[in-house]
Length: 244
Ligand SMILES: Cc1cc2nc3c(=O)[nH]c(=O)nc-3n(C[C@H](O)[C@H](O)[C@H](O)COP(=O)(O)OP(=O)(O)OC[C@H]3O[C@@H](n4cnc5c(N)ncnc54)[C@H](O)[C@@H]3O)c2cc1C
Ligand code: FES
Image (tube, rainbow, N blue to C red):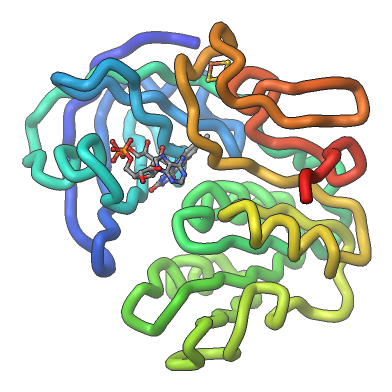
């Protein structure tokens, strides 16, 4: 974990309530897909965790949805504003288990960390399939960006206004070698039920301290409680004991 100051280069709306922010700063130690940063916001006690969507040289891309005070404040920040970030947080996805044809499943703001994952898997020559799930057509983002990486992309919408009607599980292909997923917990549970291979889940749970000290983010596993912030946010299918 490292504390650094980043400067906003770009901050724009890409869908209703959803923003893309590019920050410039020291991106050392952030190249494992599935990691996150923790952002300090003036007037707020707790930092806000946001997944790394992409990292290139000294540029970090984040995608965030405005849900409360912190993310609303972020959406109003212009270029040049400086932010204090804790970087290099989280274990990230293990790419060595992907096999030749991995499947990536993202729901809503669970989509961003899958972008850097897809980019790295494509660099390794993997045949990557992606299912992106949203509520409706207007909420869709990054379909083209995943296609530009050479991924086979399926979009699902709950109201059927675009792509396959239903949830990400309705867009799952029959054959894949392994899966990686990130999204709200009901979606993760549905993916667990529908999946036919091993895989990895990234949890975007509510957090407290964000670095392992408060036990405010625990998940029950076969080896005891794990902290999402410190031992995760990525956990393997076989180790998670899901609560009903
Ligand atoms: C490891 C990790 C990675 C994340 N990555 C992303 C990301 O890439 N993009 C993104 O948009 N969000 C992401 N989140 C969620 C993000 O951290 C929260 O949405 C944010 O902290 C809310 O802050 P706020 O001050 O705007 O809202 P608050 O004022 O704190 O809360 C407003 C409302 O949002 C709800 N809320 C707060 N946190 C969460 C949460 N984690 N999940 C669901 N509901 C929440 C609250 O219950 C409340 O109803 C991630 C969370 C974690 C733990
Ligand atoms: S948020 Fe404090 S231990 Fe995870």
